[in-house]
Length: 437
Image (spheres, rainbow, N blue to C red):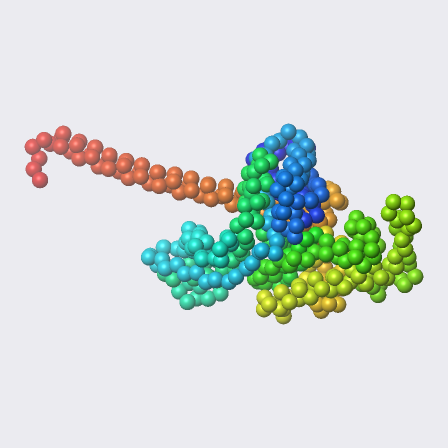
């Protein structure tokens, strides 16, 4: 695929508008079902605060630069739509139960019945300014038969379902639409970022066993809890890697860019893993004397904020009611997961098994080492979600065309039957015009 043997209709583009970066990635599935990355563009983000657009102009410029990088990688293959992620503290979730009474119990439950039940959830009354982003079925009940995961093909009159509903602010999503459209592109779909990250780094076995995905971004920490292969809980915390950087800036009395470099190059989430006698020397401002900082003190500052973030993570896991059902423990991803010893700290602080989530299982052989970083988990997940939505849309269209052709064939067959009957009746009358009934 990398040599250009792909069609425009096969190419999908994802756009991750984050607090620290805006990243656009183009790709498609190869013959083995793996993801080929065809182009990528990444620029620093200056118009986003805690996952929400705070400056339209700066965000538009960043999107334009990132998508231009994708166009160069595609080598002339154009695109007019992108699959975008949404996050931020305004994201909320709730549980609701839906009911559909079917009029014919002899007909099998179809996808249309499921779609109607899901569509009814979008009619829920929400607080002013909120909109529904996702309606995720949990389990179905057919005529009091509970615990059904997929009711399609079953017979029944009363179809019920429990739904996990994710909502967000209308203004936040509208601002994302506005920024994308001002670059001449169209938003094909909008997906909650932690759901996208889960697609990139979690295995089906982990989702079935029970796992909490913790995506530590620049401005927010996103949590998604799976159990029995279904999303059970989602939450967005207004703390991320930038909060750690600000603490380093204030605690070490340095510039913000110096604090970021200190965190990335020398930072550790566990102070006990750092030697006491290590000193970091950084240049002073405008010819002033250099500043010396203890690596141990730096680690203590980082650990304090990291533990505070993990406190909120533990609280959300307990609030979900799945604390004792997460057999696969916790998976860390996002840029904040690159912090040294963050896995150990998470295990100590939560008591759960923890691993680093890399978006490599979905990538085709020969991928760039750079793209395998957890920094790109959300972007790759959005790309996978975009490809899945496109394929599902194509299947639906084919099913509609097939159903329409079948109806047309049935109608034509019926017409031919009537024509033959009329022809035989006419021949009978022509043969014996004096025949009596």
